[in-house]
Length: 242
Image (cartoon, rainbow, N blue to C red):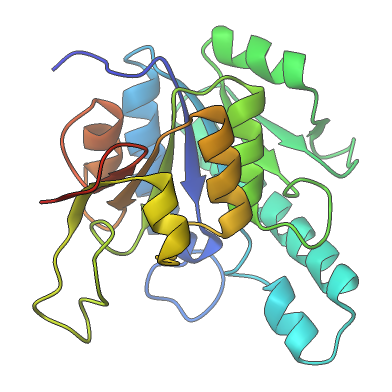
């Protein structure tokens, strides 16, 4: 199957990097993700990545524990830079040129986020990892993914999760739950399906950016998703049960 997408934004949660660990980063998981990204990058697909920080620190939980919400969110943003640097190291160990761009100035560690520079890196075949979220508290990394995808003219957002798509009910509780093959943005918003937060969905809707929700835990799924195989659930089409 030929390349379907020229430029994609891959959204990875921090939790995706910790595997079965209770906390932190599982090097084996990171190496597996890097290997798949490398495989796709060498096919000529331009890849940008937004990574979360929930494996290290969750701003919302910090705020719930009594911490100031803005402070908690800034700590969470710093955690995403740690994950971004980890991904960069794993990719560069297998000879994939990678740049980390941070929305919070950390010039000793990462480039500042500059849209034109990011696009130039992508055009040169480098993987770009966006760290520190949007640089603003109260915005999730899902919203950052939608924002960066719009800014760099990505064809699609690939949201890596622990389930194989979006269901009409929680499949863990309801075994009869059915998986959607495709969904409209409006249906996701109206039924609060938890694909991404409402700000991210609205941003994708306004800029006509489709979102593919797929299972990261299946080896090879990043490649299958990026090469256009029919897996997961796509948001941005008509409502269709698979």
